[in-house]
Image (cartoon, rainbow, N blue to C red):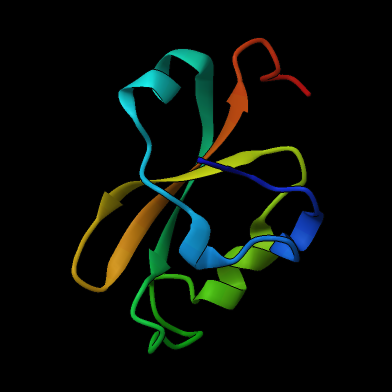
Length: 87
């Protein structure tokens, strides 16, 4: 799980986003989910977001983790700490 420090993902390297663990499930609440190309070959008009499109959606203070991985795409969850859902 990786915490964003800036909007727009300027501080996140997409390769640093790890898988979510069972421990994280008790501490965090998922507030959004993104379908992202992980091959590096995705195009802007495809259903999976390119890495750059995804990084533009990153919000400071939110946590990001891969919740499912396929051969060429991943599902990335956006999380907040329990109790901070309304922030």
